[in-house]
Amino acid sequence: MTANIDGESLTDQELGSFFILLVVAGNETTRNTIAHALDLFTRHPEQRALLLEDFEGRIAGAVEEIVRYASPVIWMRRTATRDTTLNDHDIKAGDKLVLYYWSANRDETVFTDPARFDILRSPNPHVGFGGPGPHFCLGAHLARREVSVMLRELFTRLPGIRAAAAPDRLESNFINGIKRLPYAY
Ligand code: HEM
Image (cartoon, rainbow, N blue to C red):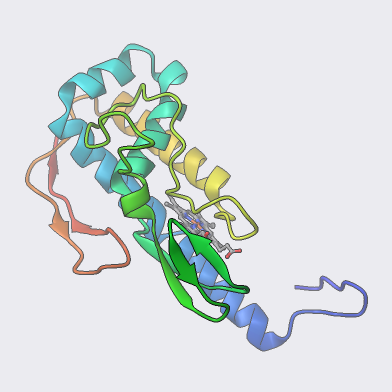
């Protein structure tokens, strides 16, 4: 809040906007990811068994695969800063472009058998946290930690925990959210 770089600080308006961004980006995403994880491990018991066989060795890869598969943020938009060509499409400076992470995370030219949930997938160059560059998710490390800790605690304390019904999904084309997920243990 007090950062000052060469005499320039954030205005109250900018701080307010950043606070709202952090609250939403840091909460909506991770809780949806954790709900997707419970749903995925319920529907793929063999993947759950693989994870529990070596939790500490496999959780990092599992989190990446959950984020790839669930793609909790479906897209973001950019404005082109200069003319360019992408896959034979001409893009002009000022054009507004939508980046579909969901689609990129199922790109069959990048991922073998992309529709398969596979916690041992390696490499796993997904873009669930955004593409490389200055806007890559600021909270990716925190998110990975949160999801790992939550799954470790859930599966250790309640080994039988499972989703008890299909998720009640958020109606949104932007956030792949789960509003409610009944569970049992
Ligand atoms: C699994 C959880 C999460 C997912 C899937 C996720 C996904 C994303 C995606 C796709 C972007 C856009 C990147 C881009 O525009 O290229 C983004 C940006 C961002 N995320 Fe996350 N995020 C997660 C968790 C978090 C957490 C926990 C925080 C903070 C506590 C956070 C803070 C942010 C912020 C501040 C940005 C904007 C970065 C910028 O534009 O410079 N995210 N995230």
